[in-house]
Length: 69
Image (cartoon, rainbow, N blue to C red; front, side, top):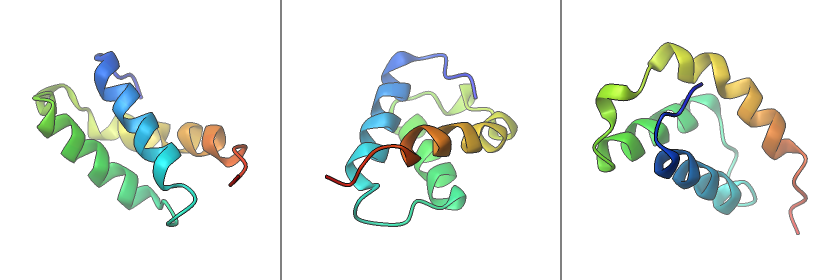
C-alpha cells in the first residue's frame, strides 16, 4: 500500500501500536480503520482499496514483532 500522505501513515501506525495489545486486528478492522482515517483526513479519494488489501500482510508482519509490553 502506498500512502501518499505521511499524516495518514503516521495515524495508522499510531492506531496499530495503540490497539494491538487490546484487540485482535483483523484485516477487515484495518481496512475499515484506514477508510475512516482517510475520510477524516480528507484523503478518501486517494485511498486505493486494492492496494490496502494487498499491503495488509506487510503491515501485519511489521506489528507482529512488537512485544505487548
